[in-house]
Length: 196
Length: 174
Image (cartoon, rainbow over all chains, first blue to last red; front, side, top):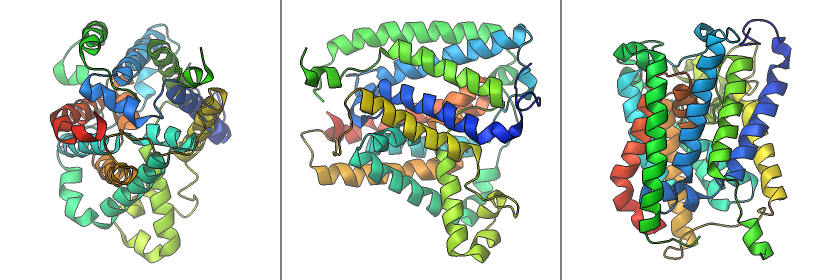
């Protein structure tokens, strides 16, 4: 039963090799989908290319259905999966800052790495900027410490928080994704084409 | 179809989404955790600060959380995963004929403008990913896969803010 490393089925000594292989698959798929192009990524915010929404939402739905299905079949112990603690204020502030960064830079961290890998100089500059951003956070941490640690709701899922059955929520999420795919396809036809 | 057209051909986004979802599912099945990206940048910064001044790094309440005597900060799962991302993306780019050193930008702006905003965007993303304890990969996508409240918050505020500020940055893109 998974998770295989957590449950001692695969020796943790394999960790870094597995990381390398899964990372390769991750990078290969992102680049193949066009995520190494900032102009393609930014399209989701202007309506000329919804590749981000299509890939991101499809991946989220496939993985969450897979995880809960495997849990249901007894192949995966969901209680052992890492759930990020919800520090509400800090996550909101971070999300807003990242949203602005997305529109200025046209990349997010993972996609910028795929851009670097194929020779995009703008992606390289973005990566250097990220390094500086993290350094600024580290150096000014005493200023941010209170906000960073405020409002921790713990390792909580959205379904626990709202008291919904996970199955119903996942069904709802899938429907929202399908509606979003349909609506954005109509929008994309009406928006002026951008050549890139 | 000319070779130039072929080099622009990307995978069907829904197929890519299914494959990405399966990679993420496999990652959770094997390791119990999701995929990430900004965590590797954090490890690099911690390692760099530690190399420049060990006392400064261990004296900082932030960096010191990620430093231990028996493990180098760069010996982390996410650092190896990101090395894999570079390799995988390079392979995909090579197979599709997309390897090319260039600055990609809208014809309405100069390369210089593009690079200035790329750097600023990276800086904002680096800063924001520390507040949110992860970025679009580690917080938003991996978080959503396990229905984490933090993951949904990150996703909504990254993309929500993007739509709110898109108007002000439109000259960069359209």
